[in-house]
Length: 253
Ligand SMILES: Nc1ncnc2c1ncn2[C@@H]1O[C@H](COP(=O)(O)OP(=O)(O)OP(=O)(O)O)[C@@H](O)[C@H]1O
Image (cartoon, rainbow, N blue to C red; front, side, top):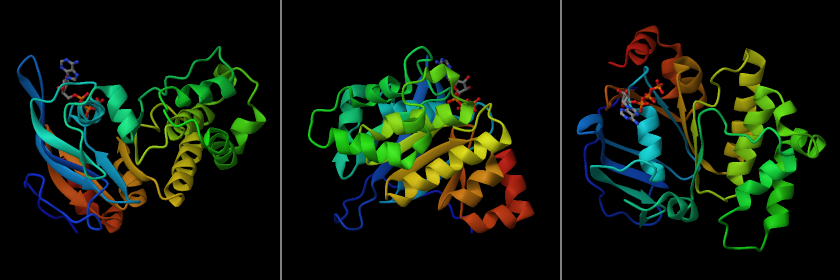
């Protein structure tokens, strides 16, 4: 069922009802031109939320702003109850937000294992690192099998698993992904979403930006449609069967 977009500021909440990620009135401007126009949304504990919309809707700008990589001109971001508005990217990561960027950013000449280890940079707690590495290798066995191989030799879907595994090593409360299926074959897309299913089963909250509207709506617990910098629809998985809602989702209105 579509619902209207809540425009409230960050309201006081008890810890139990607190969303893992809470965004209120987020605005991004490039040289004064608005790209994200005051959006508000939340990702609950253990919830998978989709963010879809046409090219130029402001999806990547939203993720970049949440990571602190792009300055926000207004709005507030709270992660696990803590205000992280305006923090530098390294502090955002330490606070518990991780991003698998568009294009994966894998170092092709480095081994799979060393690419994974890059996810440990910036981690202050040394305890549990070996266990966390093992857990990622259990989650994505192909990374264990090809651990000594150059990452550039992996298929697109396997590289995406590597990028997700690397992000998980930062122990994020919320894992964000920017178009993880971009440029992948249908089989590789299945591999990526199976990987996300495994991450979801661990209880990690997920915010996934995608262009594949129908797929994302069916996969996520809730999906927001972004159009021209504004959230225009909030959809539940049953909308994937509803032609009218799908059309609205594709056109963003
Ligand atoms: N660094 C930048 N400088 C100036 N304008 C930008 C910059 N990055 C994005 N924009 C503009 O902001 C708007 C939103 O772009 P953004 O990349 O966030 O959209 P998107 O929904 O992620 O699109 P796509 O799916 O094509 O990646 C677009 O009009 C884009 O041209």
